[in-house]
Image (cartoon, rainbow, N blue to C red; front, side, top):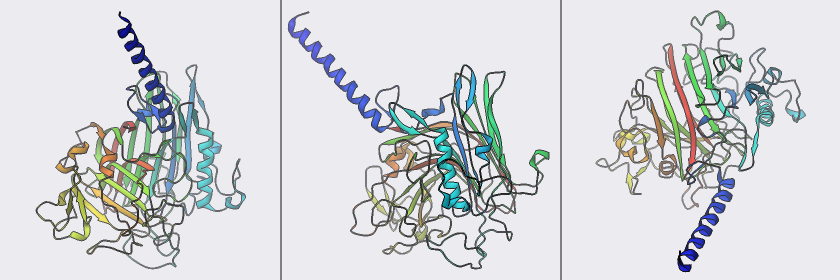
Length: 492
């Protein structure tokens, strides 16, 4: 080898070493580095491959609060977190921890919230997070995947839920389901701690019912029901999460999701500190990878989300700060149930966003009936506190979040194919299990969200990414069942 060639090789090696060092440093700040070396993960457990599982449970009433604890159940927060050592599962959360409820103190709790159900649940989630937290050298700390269950019953005669963030007196309406006093109750919670079976399979579960007078161990009968079972072979494969949800005429609007939430700060729909799996909050350059097998769809009113992303910023573009009267939760959801059709149409422009942005960044106004993709949008609604709205418009429900909200609901359509999303009804639905790699960041950056004119564009930082279904006020008994695995948020 000549001197010139030798010098060239030395420079090339030095270049590679510098780049490897740079990538390593960058990876420590932006997420866990993946095997490819070109991408990193925003979640603590990329692809759900880690033997030592971290999973938690939270239940909410209509406006993402607690209201009242179910008798004997404690605050509706629980966790199943363990490490594996010498083929044994070392659990980090006790059942007494999971049963903590108002009036019971634990390490670090603020004495002022001990008897306040909404705030007690917040403190309990932080406490469970401290027990489950994983700290690693090359990533920020993280806590758990979150299973979220929500009851859509709304008793307007109570004052439990604000209107666009403002406390209001009781009122009477038939807009929302409620069988009478107590309809906003929390469910029972049964926990089967994860155990290692003789076959080498690890398995655990949460399940329960909203019908507090029914013992589901003796059979479901006509009761509402939810269940999430997780399984993984020790030392190989991925965790598989098996979900079931059942609604009844008494509880006709239920939601069940598996969420990757922020590990600190606010998550989508909340106005206080949360804990979760997203140790790096994604913005525009990220993809979501997930495997989904829908077994039962939940009926024609099941708004089954291939993916749902949540963020929060004020109408002036500034970040949310916990002021529920000026913060606005923003959601985007892709519904894959083929029975759910577009409410947005040339005759119903109030259900459409003012414009659509194409992958090559062209704006198409909703009045452009030849080019606007009406079938790509199920429903769009504006925040109730927006001051400069383009008519016509539809106002979002002002009660179902603790702060105002904005909602963009999408449907499979050819226009989304550029981002890896379904392009026609039925894709990814019953009988069509798939592993999806969705360019969620690119799509989210092109969706319309309201902002006050003349204000700097908001920095869209997504604090929650989840999947599951919202069975929306059915008068029938409905059942949904699905299997989820391989969940990852990839920073590109």
